Image (cartoon, rainbow, N blue to C red; front, side):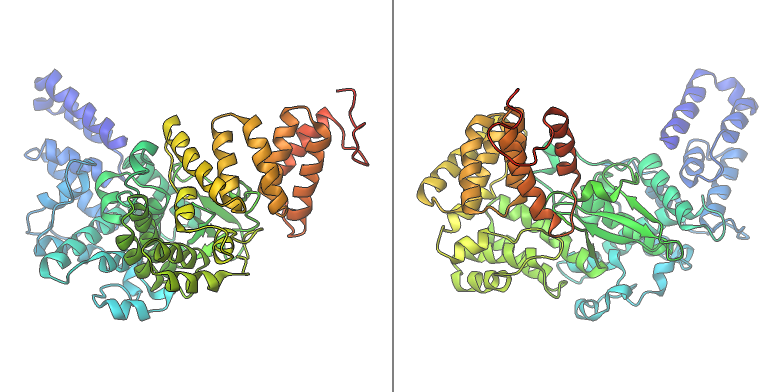
Length: 523
């Protein structure tokens, strides 16, 4: 935003009145209005006034900032324009240009003091060597670029080095804003200001990312477009943190990822929500009814998650062969992962590789992830012969913001439930489609039918409690709420949703000591 404002001020002065600029007065004012720590603004000023003394001063100042405030004797003799264009390139203007060897060497020299240079994974080109590295030695950006590189050719390596140069320049611009020996909080604030403020990285609209989530996950695409889903921007954040000597953890609530910092001395925690401009969200926000604690992921696992995100696109498009290939690629970065075994097992079933699919589902049979309250029931029902692969496809079919997509999924699920009346998730997902359409009356009997098959699901009990509360059936509301609480409390979990429902219900009808039909009969 600062860069855009700066350019607007400069262009306004240029076209409004050329005389003061030639005299130097207005130009001097414009120059002094630049942020003295912004490389991008000084490069932009130089691009507009390259032949003026102040323009050349701006270029020299920007170069000093990239050198960490040191003053090199002379500017490099190479053509700096590609580097300037790289820094000031607008999002979506084009894919990142490939830099030439002389520019790459210059940037690599500028970044030689960045912390990721001490990692064994920095500069690595062999995939097997990468996979054998311990997680704490992996350079995340290089590992992702290398894993996504289809062929090891000079052109492919040039592309990788160009994108790495992009991240290096970003890190150097952030360092220019920091004091020596900056604290972790200062680094986090500087990264947030730079990527969300100056560079304006944003979460893409749902209608765009839902169909092409891989585009907004892959690091090159995120860098080119300044748009990314939670995983895409978190990967960029982690890549910058590795360069800036900032210790971060990747945290994955179900269907989401964010990063956090924990101070080793004070244990103070800072959550960084990359879909909301880096704000510090309370950890409780990420704990749902089923989620009792948050999973911490290693750098190695983050690479695997990137391939799992890509695989979800193939699944959505019913390109199961491509989906399997990506899940198998992801498996190289996990020692064992519950969700990966389940999803890869399902996709083996979709293509007729039944024995392989069953083998993976049996791996998770009877197991329950430590961070969850309830085990997966889809694989359990499949192994028990209660449904088939087409039923799995029905519950995982995606919907968008259009009502028609919900109705389409609802129709599939109605057919599934008729064919497989004991398929628990089929019944639950059918009930959820009615809730999404605001039809609680139709959802209620389906939820009660589901609870009769699986009374240990706290989420379904919560839904029933909320619906009965809305319908002033306070006795039943208390019954289902108490049952949901009993389930989660046994796991030492106290989710916010249940607390809030209890408060609302308590205000309308104080909790009866014994539930009976006379409780709160004045309603």
